[in-house]
Image (tube, rainbow over all chains, first blue to last red; front, side, top):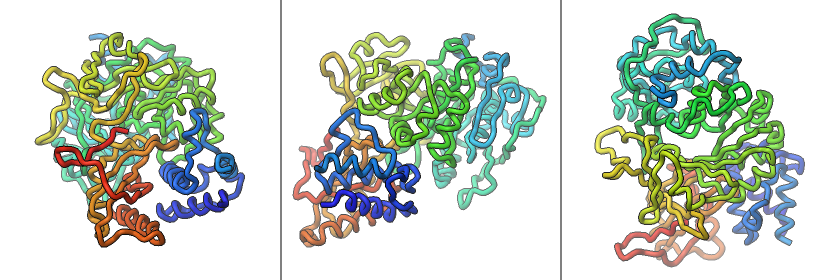
Amino acid sequence: MNVRSEIVSQFTQVAQENDKQLAPLEDNLELLASGLDSLCFAVVVVRLEGTFGVDPFSNSENAHFPVTFGEFVRFYENVAK
Amino acid sequence: MSQSNPSSLWNALVASGDGHDSFIGGAEACAPRSALVTGSILDGRADELRGCSVVVVTANQLTAALTLFELDGIARRIILYPGELTLDYLPFVVDAAEVDAVVSDRTTFGSNVPHVRYFMPCAHKIVPQNYDRSGQCQTEWVLLTSGTVGPPKLVVHTLSSLTGVIRPNQSQPGNVVWSTFYDIRRYGGLQIFLRATLTGTSLILSSPEESTSNFLARAGAHGVTHISGTPSHWRRALMSPSIRLMSPEYVRLSGEIADQAILNQLKTAYPQARLAHAFATTEAGVAFEVNDGQSGFPATVVEQTQNVEIKIEDQTLRIRSSRTANRYLGNHAPEIKDAVGFVDTRDMVELRNGRYFFVGRRDGIINVGGIKVHPEEVEAVINQHPSVRMSMVHAKKNPVTGAIVVADVILSASATPQESNGNELQREIMHFCRQTLSSYKVPAMINFVSTLPISESGKIARSNA
């Protein structure tokens, strides 16, 4: 399973469901500038847990939420290995 | 009268001194304290609203803040209408709070034009006005909270109950700049507004028009030293590189349960800051705060909190103090306090190794980023879908919003999903929900199940997580 393409697909799906205009998903894109709001990110995390079977944020109480899209992808790539 | 019991907000403003350059800063404009003492945003006409029940329904937070200095002690009742709340509830509020006057910077109300005796526009700037500001009454302050289903509940406080926790001289005003992510028309934000007013410090207000990054940059530029928000506000702030533009001495969380993850993240982001999470609700007032950087609260808090009685009965936290709300407004409104004056917060706690931890809500309410969602309301919508037999909506822990809504659904016999179209049916039910429910109430995920836990009384047995 390609982690990045799953994440892109969830961002796209959630943006569409919530009528949000999604910015091009490049690695240096700040998540807060992506067009998604907090609720959208919350939904993305839940859906990705459904896909990957893991919530990387529940693994550690010190896990910082990623700031850029690239960091977000790597965050999931690291736990999906 | 003691200083912590101001006779009116304007008197408190005057009493806190004008020997320094403090101000209230909005996103577009700032109001210096000296102008607040001698100026008016109501064209000097606040006097006309003596004895009235007044709803303040402004688009702009700064405007709302300025009207409060003019109306407290003058109006019989002030209702604070939050900026993000749909105007659809305005006619309900006008009716329930027997509103005589609307104070607003809005020129249009859509189809919700309030039918009241007075409409008083507020200007966008303060004009010097000399008029009689002597307070005559103890104004009721009415805050809105989310109701079970439908319109908000109207919670009655007084300036005295709202400011009970504030000690006017506890800080050195010249060094402190307060800010809050909250709308000051919500209990958590109002606490910070009143704290800044009574202690003579500056206050930086947030704005719904402004991005988190820009707000953090503005707070940083004004040298904010003390700042409060919900754990969800803070989680969002931590997603912004601009979090580094601010360097607060004091970071406060309230309004939602602070888990260990958010406390650790804030400790890492601001190692120099004192970190506190407070337990406060609109109804129960500020009960206590925890300063040891750990989630939950030490069992000693129950016995040793000054001026607040705390007890745990039937597993929920109950509070009695002079800071609790007085009552709900409206016909057939439930009681806020029990027969002996305790407010049941309905927050369930569990004692583990000398510390209490929050384990959920007695009524199953889900707190999605500070917004309360009642599972029954969501279930009622899901159950209308033709493929659904019954459903149970519950909370799922979430790193962004604290919790999020998910649903377990039993499908009707004719609609059992094939492997191939299960996802499609999930999406269809979510889409169905989205047509009538606000986005934060729509389940983020739907699980198809074959059974749901039913209690002996025949109701869905809700888990408390």
